[in-house]
Image (cartoon, rainbow, N blue to C red):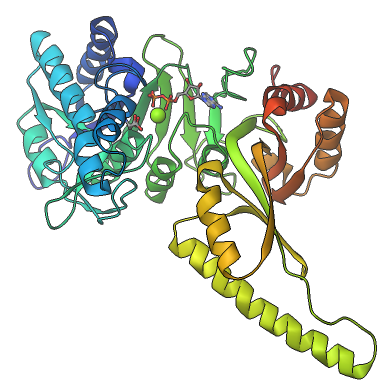
Length: 434
Ligand code: ADP
Ligand code: ASP
Ligand code: MG
């Protein structure tokens, strides 16, 4: 009870439903059941929806994007965002009607109407603030608020989208702005698994995972939740639960890190590795940056130092230019003579054009996947790399490049070896069994 008013504090829940969860009337009936359950438990629900279905379905995001490209391949990002945002708007109206048909007092809002303000980076806009008051007003009247995910609006009133998979981000942003008790992400799998179940059928559902681990897994390609959504929820310690729309399974609870506040449940078990991820369609680029002079005598040494400094300046300019072109680099490895990194395959032509502007030679290996072993428990544990190498060696998967951080070891492999590599690593670390 709050002292001033004697009113019970509103307990808000954000429930996000993905594309397959809203695709058919049967699926939407399940959505209604989850919303009714939340209401019955005393929550005020905010329902965030994705566009209905997947690529090929009439109102799915990919279908809408292709529609624009069919008319003119060079659609401007501002126009493309306006069209792409319609998928979630259609879905939100249909879901609102479904809820109303079940007797719930539901009202629909676009992302902009729900107070989500973004910058104007069309296609991948950043949320700069959320005004919770429009949603709160409706919640206070006892309404269920249905919000179109994946979108916001700029200060100038332009509609933007939040990047692919961005309805998760909408849910997290509203959860934080409304100080929700919990954010539930409903999808087509019963939680976060030890690997993508499409590649590893015996992947196990993880009961509890840290924000840090899932953030790493999401950044490394586990698309079960958008990494930005994790980052946002993590800022305010709002619990996230990933659940399957179509099953009663408890799903996965995302909790604080190992070092987190004591109110968070401890991460169970002594697992070293939590999961295996894969990121397809990447290319390795090696840029050759040879020095002019090498040698042992004093003059040559000076020349080498001068050459190194000049080389450094050129490299810096080249990397700045790649960044300005929106080309994000990963698995970066430097020697004075070779700069090695990976990028999305679709960005190779743009990157090569920039590299050649600097008169540098580059070698490209297309058709690669980045396969990663992720786990907070591997910090300081010896032998993880040896296990990775052993597993891939035994599976006959050549490693093109590796990189690591305190909770990840990543290997670049050829595209046709992706599945084999993920399965071999999943087996090596015994992830199918607790
Ligand atoms: P939604 O439309 O509900 O947001 P997504 O397709 O974006 O659904 O995400 C769910 C999909 O994520 C699953 O169908 C699954 O194939 C994939 N996925 C990838 N890695 C994992 C993982 N580690 N655990 C669970 N699902 C994963
Ligand atoms: N519909 C959008 C997409 O397909 C956003 C989402 O589903 O989260 O990327
Ligand atoms: Mg998704």
